[in-house]
Image 1 (spheres, rainbow, N blue to C red):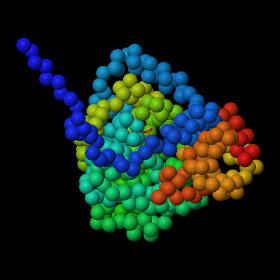
Image 2 (cartoon, rainbow, N blue to C red; image 1 turned 90 degrees about the vertical axis):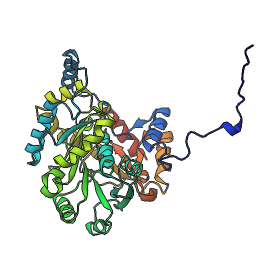
Image 3 (cartoon, protein in one colour; image 1 turned 30 degrees about the vertical axis):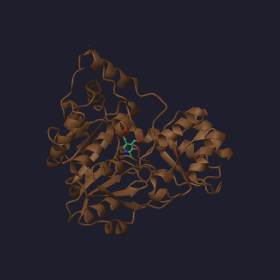
Image 4 (cartoon, rainbow, N blue to C red; image 1 turned 90 degrees about the horizontal axis):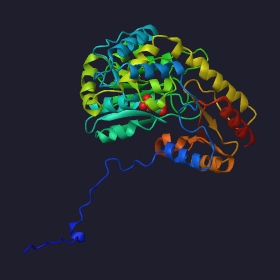
Length: 396
Ligand SMILES: Cc1ncc(COP(=O)(O)O)c(C=O)c1O
């Protein structure tokens, strides 16, 4: 006789799979929320930071060539050597610092992976990391997941200039890392040579690591120079400099970037990279290596985006918004205080629903979600999109 034992499920058996979130404060990002709302209302979308035009056909056909030429298996763990070589040459030419492709350059899954990996490789429980706000949203979760403590320096609208005395006061014997972003998302400001020299002076007597997020390195306006951390010897000796081909070549969906650092730092970085992703899309790396051999492909970008910025700013000159021209990145902040007293998230939502234009409210990047009456508009858009956006903004 077969006896069937039937187990009845009682509440006593219920064991929650999640006891406590490792990131209790992380919610759906503002980019997703705004993007969904914009799509739902068929709004002109200047919220998210990516182009709505195509990448160069030449670059795309180089990827096709790489696929057809059989580069479809794992790339080397630190990246395709030919790509690391051209990255090294590019940095040497632009910033006069030599990074050894063998030990000091790693190709990553976008700058995001470079940032996450550098933080994971060095931040331990209780380590403090200085984050300059408003800040791009991927830094803090990575710090917190590793048990670190973000320590904030809040910049003020409309200039978003850093006060180095305030910055210095935030350094303690627990400070392990400083995160810098120039050109700066969302403010469109850049760190000057003087800023970088001040930072170099402050960090000199310490063993603090600098994580320099330079994804907009080639989008800088009015003849100004990108002051990469790799230009300043004492900064470069302690820095991870992170870059993104997505931003530079209009291919954010490919998620390929890189970072450079002195060999002893990079050795630790690669220990994490190796087990997080091992390696990055091989055919894309082959294509990028070829495409980078022509420097005009990245040096012409300043001019390309400056024209877009100028068109956008010229167009909204007669609007009620106040603004300081973006110095770099493909973002422009607009101060809506002459139009409304609303919270930025409220007006941001209203502009999507009632006026058909989407932007990003800046409060979500600030300490305690401070409202500075600023909305961020991305001008990496086709001419016709910018024309429509300008028309709407001038009517407000
Ligand atoms: C300041 C900043 N850092 C990093 C990233 C991420 O770059 P990637 O797409 O290469 O991961 C972005 C993307 O918007 C950004 O704005």
